[in-house]
Amino acid sequence: MGIAYAATEGGGHGEEHSIGETILHHVQDSHEFDLWPLGHLPLPEIHLFGIDFSITKHLVMMWIASVLLVAVFRLAFRRQAAVPSGIANMLEALVVYLRDEVILPNTGEAGRRYLPFLLTTFFFILFCNLLGLIPYGATATGNITVTAALALIALTMIQLSGIKEHGLKHHLQNLVPHGLPVWLLPIMLPVEILGQFTKPFALCVRLYANMTAGHIVILSFISMIFIFESFLISPVAVGFALFINLLEVFIAFLQAYIFTLLTSLFMGMSIHPQH
Image 1 (cartoon, rainbow, N blue to C red):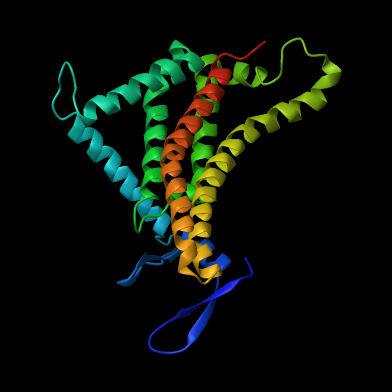
Image 2: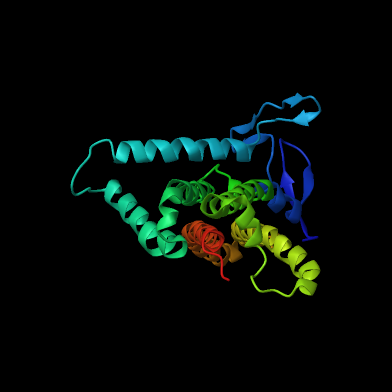
């Protein structure tokens, strides 16, 4: 990514920009929205007691995703019907599929009380993923701090589901396989505790990496036009970028599905420990 291209600004001289820096600028969080060709919309920076509470682009996208999530479901189901139609039918099909084929098979009947959490997780991640594919949008789930927060919530629910089912004492006892020789406890106990954190850590990194990689690939294909400094390469570059962009729609659904699937699986393991 050491190749640079010239971008002429104003009426004057060319200014060199690293293509790598340009790509990272588009996938990283920032304190402003790029509204080309209108310019940049700055976002307020807030610092209280030495802590940064600034409103960033990815935070705004999460707010938008949350508002859209509530609005879409309220509008879709504002009228109760025996046989829903349109978007309500599609949403109900998704909810029923996740409930009957993903969540309950992993958690059992005890998992019914966690359906609101798991379904909200799926649709929130899905909306964040899809918003990153529209013009001027940004993928909040391409931010490691966002996926880490989602993983931390998942970790909390995994532990709470086990405590709710077995009580705190027995839940902690379930961390270590029954019948384990006493001399193995100093080895297995730290391993099992570490395993409780590595599971949500894997969720965090997987979602972040997949959502970031797709955007980097798309921008890399577009950058080929500037690297070769020829519009002859544009049909190939734009064609591949369009294909990856369409693939990103599928990946948006897939990553939301995988995050929900694995979270429900880990919750099921906490509710029904293997002895």
